[in-house]
Image (cartoon, rainbow, N blue to C red):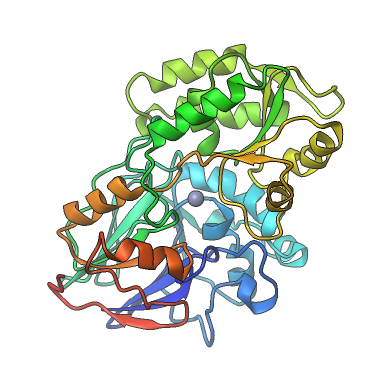
Length: 388
Ligand SMILES: [Zn+2]
């Protein structure tokens, strides 16, 4: 079994890889890289793509699905596997991040999407592809790919210690390709949630909390100390996410449903509210927050950013200028969760995705079998039973 690392290795964004075994070749995720331009915006998928038998999409964030229209424009004609929740959100992601002309000509092709449920095991040729809940977003999954001789797990984005979502245990494997977004950040989600709650409590006159529509929004709603407002355009999606009880920890659905029911609807024509205001996206690149960030900045309305800020994104610019605060609301594994994933997978050889090289070096002392030199563009052999 071989892997081609097409994006997200030694970098954050354009997450994508192929698993190759005999005549079988499958593509896992096809993301774009916010802040990059030209070829670096897309996966490093060169040459013919006719030998790709199937595409599997872990979830609908732009760094995992944003290059789908681009892939179709290059002639990909095979099936596209995703969950119903991912399908429902993917179109909006493509509208925001695909090249407009690509998206116009190659929108999400509903007739070629093969829907599966988290927990299903799928088959392509001699490969079996097991899936499990990621804990990152509703409908998000990890993939375990087995060719009968060896097994590779690609976690995509996962959250092992979410206050909201369930993550299924990663199975034993020969190679673990895991979510290294936060490197060796030791602060767990519960402590960060408290920090965010305290920050919000210190800004009773109102504040802006930019957030991705899926995933982190629910984590923030669970963490907020009192009443809040949402951008009105988020309500139906949040209702759908909260209604997906199979993805949520016990009791969380009822708690969030009550909080959403009492949340005020805010729209662009209103004055800025005297409440914490959730608006998507998380970095000011797209959606209502692309309009709200400059408006809040101009009005001196406090802003708390809580996630990844690509260099040069509006959120990053404000934060670097000292005009917005930042506290991470974990939507990826922190150190204890990362080590736990690796140990439960049988301490296999490991590659980290979605982070810069220095963060991989930070993890090396905690995960001795981590291959810190793997980069986008490389081909990796998976050897059976390869252990630390
Ligand atoms: Zn994600």
